[in-house]
Image (cartoon, rainbow, N blue to C red):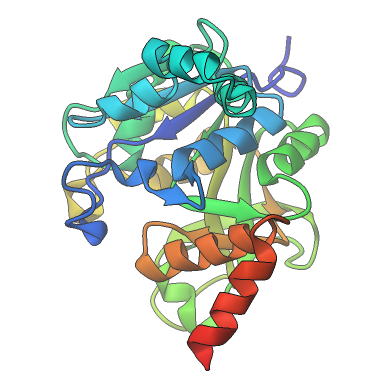
Length: 295
């Protein structure tokens, strides 16, 4: 089976970060377990992966992240209590969120050596097949799940794909940026990529949004990758080598919805408002409260 036709079954979620921007909230609670409305951030991202047809969820964790594993496991006492109290709606919702037996795997990133190193830590579980990578800080909120759009595009292009979205030209130096053959196309061949280019040098205004489909050859490149900025192993450096040295094609898939960086306080608050406003049972009262607060 060629890589172009091989189905994307596994998704990797790097969840080992310390969440220092949210201290003291994240001193004892992982940042991925902070809630957007009534669902943890990581649950929203797993929902996206499941909607795209992902069958195996691979979590790269760190110390003090055991609660993430507990979240995706059965809790006998809670479920028995809900059943005894005839709270079938709540019980059904909990059970619907659980991965099936054997569908979730957890591995440790033992040292904070960057995103590239976190991805490399998943190599034995992913094996020799293409996989999806979703950064849990970034919530993609649109009419169609971002990863599903990418997997649909992958069926035609094969290779490696990166989700992108436009940012103002004066902000490109804050992001990883890709150059493409057609900046206005939904799917376009990537001609280059650069991490946080100096102002005025970016090849486009399309920034990398935290969703990827990668071929397994990335693991060998990450194993050889020297430490880059901040003493970390950078994923972008190995993707550039995969594109240039191994001549593997990369395509950008433009996401046209809203993206909320839940690693920042403003992004996290905005996500709560946006997701709350789309809930029919919450939206009217939430709008009224927002109007009251704004005077």
